[in-house]
Every structure is written in C-alpha cells, then in structure tokens.
Amino acid sequence: MRKLSDKQWEIIEPLLPDQDFSRGGRPRVDKRQVFEAIRWVLTTGAQWSEVPLKYCSGKTAWKRFTQWKQQGVWKRIWQQLLVMLDKQDKITWQVSYLDGTFASAKKGGQ
Picture (cartoon, rainbow, N blue to C red):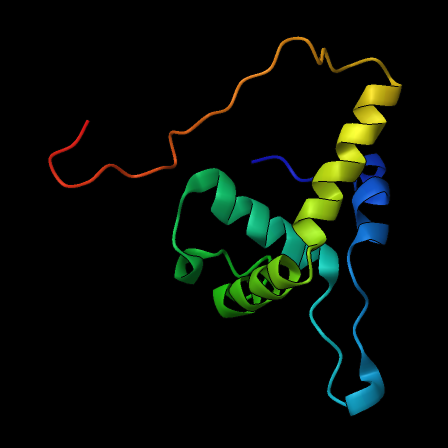
C-alpha cells in the first residue's frame, strides 16, 4: 500500500485534532503514522492487532480511530475533500450511487 504523498498529507493534517496537554500526559504517536495505520487497516481489512509496527501499535491506531470518529473528524475530512473536488470540477453530481455492501443480511438472507 502506498503512503500518502506530502501534498495529500498537507490537506489532511490540519483537519486532525492536536493533542490536548491541559490534563498532562506524554506526547502521542505522530498523527501521520497513526493515520497511515488506520488507512492500512481500512484498506487491507486486517485486524487492528495486525497493524505493522512501522506505523504504531494496533491499539493506538484503534483508540485514535475511535476518538476521531466520536469527534466527527472523519466526517469533516470527507466533507472537505468533497468541497475540494467540487471546486476542481472533479465530481459529477448528476451521477451518484450508494454502496450498501457493508450492510450484513440476516442469517440465511440474500
């Protein structure tokens, strides 16, 4: 899997929250490493425990993924990318579809 380019990271990085040191704590793992670990899991479909250590621990990636989900970070990234693509006329709004392959069927269902 290819890593994000520096140009892609320049778009994503400002949308990720910084660590809040108001309650103390040690510095977190680098946001880019964690983001790449999350991308790796989502791209490969592997379990969090299988995250390669070159990124970070799977537990760290899962915690940050969950925190960012609760904070609405993923939605903000998605919205920002849609706005950017729309400004560049790279989205055809007249043609769209929803993919429901992630929805599981009841046992024995189609």
